[in-house]
Length: 239
Image (cartoon, rainbow, N blue to C red; front, top):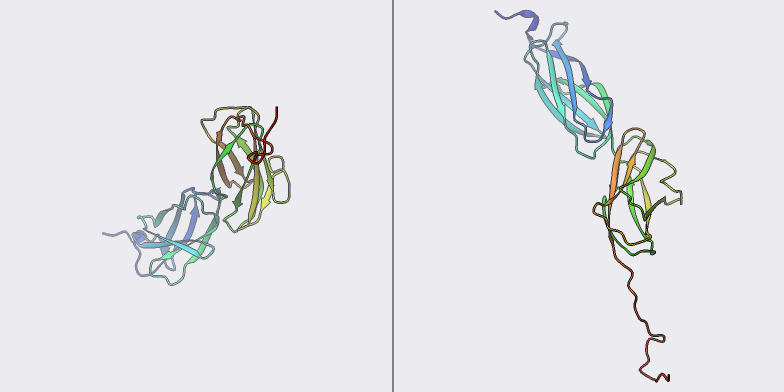
């Protein structure tokens, strides 16, 4: 005998869906759960196929599951490691031509390009370079703080945006899909040995996070004899 209270005859509808997070850093897996009922009733729709669409900026991922005896379904959305934005979740029967949006969630991402840099330095001679910081999501990110990690004594790091503002001392905002060019300057006071790269890390108030690793090759200054004028072939030098 089949219990009528858990058996879906004909059509059914998804009446709820919820994401396991509201806001999270990029790359966070998201569990989406929901309930399906027999169409026109409050009875659970058991063992029926459900499709879930997770969409961001027009790009849609399709996930599927079958409900349990209580009409419950569960799918896991695994985003790319650096993707971000405001995601919408829609769900319904697999045969449906359109799905009802039921919830949303945010994934916050920042990207640095390039993320790996190698520089050769000499004591007393500063070295400059540039990289790009990007907000790949469609939502603004605020109060992005930059900090320098694994920075030993004798090495100084400066970081400025293209408007000349010191970004180690002043957080910045970055609009959705926007980029900013950042210039770093690294100085070495004396010879030193580094086993790990210096890391410039960025974290937004919303949770977006990225970093740039700068590997340093530090060499000694070497004395070099230079003739002035350099070409003495046409004359002689008298003691």
